Image (cartoon, rainbow, N blue to C red; front, side, top):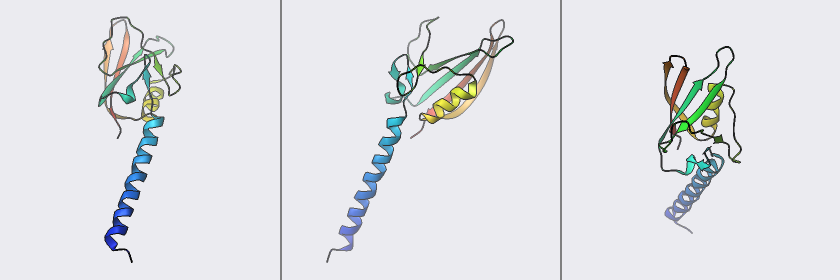
Length: 129
């Protein structure tokens, strides 16, 4: 007859493997590409999503993600999904929901109004673990 210790050790090992598999499956589906780089694989904790409202009479937004990369003034930031296909967003919440579904959690937001340029919304997000 096996001791209780052996049974508990095997159960502990089993549950550890199950948790690791579930965690790895979650990371497999969570992919956000910024200019061809999967930011979910980088050693970063926070990102900032910047949404610029360019429309005067109609909503026209430009979304960019800052994860600490070097960006030159005027550079276009291309955000893509898990298939590395560019994603266009119709609204701030569409972009925020996209990031939430792909492993990022909302922390805080603030608004900066720029004369003659419209409103710039800043969203700080933290990686979900």
